[in-house]
Image (cartoon, rainbow, N blue to C red; front, side, top):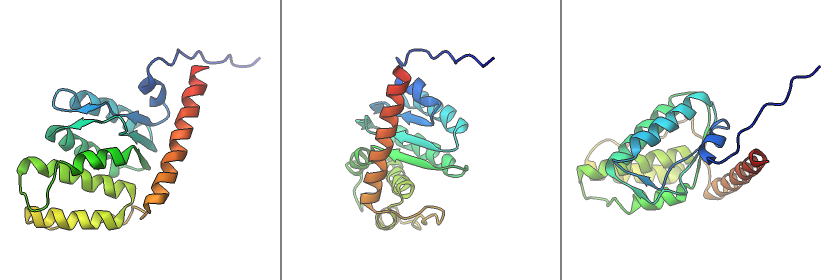
Length: 179
């Protein structure tokens, strides 16, 4: 007299299998053509999970609209309860950094700046955040964004360690799903 085990479908789609665990991996291209679908899927998972892991390691291209939509989605997440952990963030930071230049006030670059600032805040890289916020303020002649005191400052080593642990947990969960 026990409850029978739950039927588990084959884990063919990694995003679907990981969706119940609060994990979302963004696609390789976050562009005008794909960003709405990506954000809708992300929001579904975000709204169901208080703690969330977001993987940017596959992202190879991001355009202005993709950056703007991602800033909006991440900003809404920060207003909710729960933790957020970014994986593959160095990849995204590298992509975004290539799109901006201090002193070049191109309106199309603003979403890249804001996303980069948001990523540093979410990671807990306070010094990098503050330096980037000042560069943004100088470039666009606005007040710099403020550090959110709810975020704990971390070092790059702490972030790398946390990310390695998270990747191992995700891999283990995916293997268990496959069985």
